Amino acid sequence: MKADLDNIDYFAEERSVDAVISRTSPEADERLAKVWAALAKHLHPFAKEIDLQQAEWDAGIDFLTRTGQICDENRQEFILLSDVLGLFMLTDAINNRELVGATESTVMGPFHVKGAPELPMGSNISLEGKGGKLSL
Image 1 (cartoon, rainbow, N blue to C red):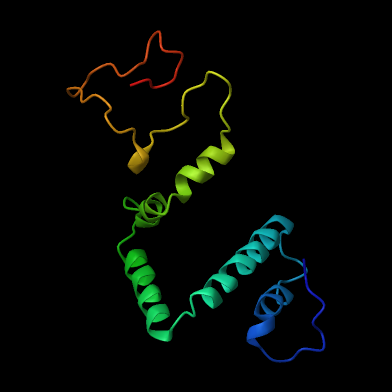
Image 2: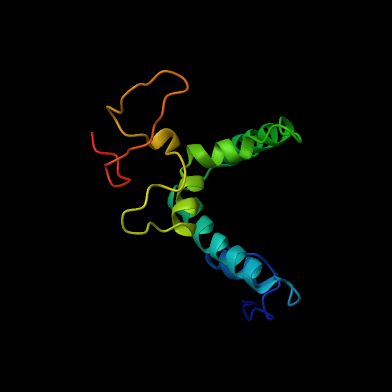
């Protein structure tokens, strides 16, 4: 995945992605290098598209720092952030692509079905006779 940038010795906006990818160690895990490269290929155009301002980036770093500071062995706030961004559900969907007639592999979190019946605590929520699909 290493880009051929041996002649480039400085960072420039127009080739920021290549600059990042070129610094990937040749000993890096191949899959990790692929993920890192894809992240740079999507993140840099995002920053350019919105003309990311320094104060906005500083606020983002502060948010992520504070999120990390309240994590511990019993509390993981980054998984909640991935829920809010929909990334947890997307990753789950990618890794558990639905089989015909199968139910979802996990609860839908903030992507719940509107109008779902409210049931008292301890109720049976199986959808017996409905083919594993919620049909409201």
